[in-house]
Image (cartoon, rainbow, N blue to C red):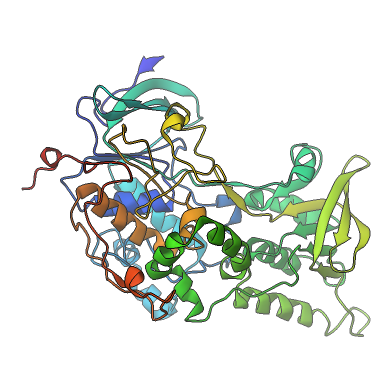
Length: 486
């Protein structure tokens, strides 16, 4: 195997100021905002051959649940050349967008916008698999080994680079409940995660009966898509959920202020035990269904009660049951599945036999430990064994490590429900860049919510500090000499 060509990857001679691992929307936001800071030397790696954002769930007609201003940069720097409006201008589509009067854009359009940014930024390097991350105490640098992959994912070269700081944005992975994992891993049994829905959509539409498990937005969109494309009176659909209702997402103006920097700072300052108690009760802020999707489902069901082939009204062949958990599951014959159900409130049990199952059971944050195994002894953890993360999204490390490791979408336990929200992505990127430069690279407002969270308003409304050392660290994370200003 060859050593990687420096022309295809960042030069290994001079260390980077920031190396990003993973190129999802959050690290892409950081790369876009860092592009406006020429004094920073950055590079971002991803093992995939190109950018893609939940390709299995880009259902026609589905939209983002946040306004288009929650793009990669606009809520921090609306004049950035990497804004969504600049993308529309580059594509000659400003007038169609203007007349469409869209505040919530299609997911396919958001995916295309992100690909445009990723393909345009020279700091984004796809086809690079990170193999190991170590701290080099002799050089006071992180040492990162990687493998260059071809379009088929085969290794073609290896390389090594060094960086003063890291940012990890490796995203989430589809969650399949343990009791359903053997079925999902069997190629002959039609049990799949919603992340793979579009890949198997034709097979699902042809199935005699389909069961969707999960009460969030993904489950609702898949149920609606299947319902719209199955014959009247022979829908053959079941939708199950553990939640007590197919509930709407909290979308009131003041409720949305839970996705502001003010609330993030408030949540971070709470005791660990309080944060852990609070998070499960906030599921309707980010895990429920938007009002338009609920309305569309009800309208589709209602239309199917109007007439039948006999001319008489009839209920569609669908079952929607909340408050139900799947206890176990097994195969029935060669290609059917039996789900064993329990209704929590009733204390009753039942079974459903189905031809296919779609698990809209959400995602889990990818653990950092496999990637950071050599640095694990230097990580500081909370009482539950999770990495501690400071207010500037830095892992709390042993003071002997002088560089910083920032994380993106791996700190829900410390920063709250706004962690995976696209609307806070640009803000977090700006906080990281301000922290790295020890300067106000991006001006951030002191206050972002009308709500005062907590009795003391000062922590939430105090302007973000700059050049604050990481816990246990006595020096800034970037040396001044590394940042010449022209």
